[in-house]
Image (cartoon, rainbow, N blue to C red; front, side, top):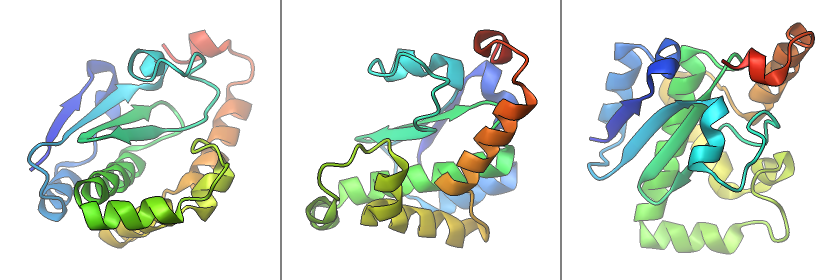
Length: 165
């Protein structure tokens, strides 16, 4: 069973108890920690990203650690879906055979933060499918891009730092 850490500012995006129970049944990952964190804190956990509001990504996994970033582009259900997606990456990373196979199929010369990479990468597609199968609906990158556009349009009159406090 994975460990779930939720930043106090991210609590409104916490998936339901039922969704968390579904995730814990689906993913037996005792050495994994998954964190739900406000988007404004991305540079703390991903120092290569200096502008957390560029919307390059919404989560990432490194080894047994997954980081999910929240703001007004997300909801409780999209976060549950995203948690399943990231936990799928952890599972693949822990299986040497799968890791090697997916690494061999990774599209060359594409930035892993790009939409094109997410559309073409077999591992991303498998993790999308696993999350969708678990929850019965998709909140994939294309869904999220649409939410980002709506969120930015709705809040265009605000400064980005003011918007995400």
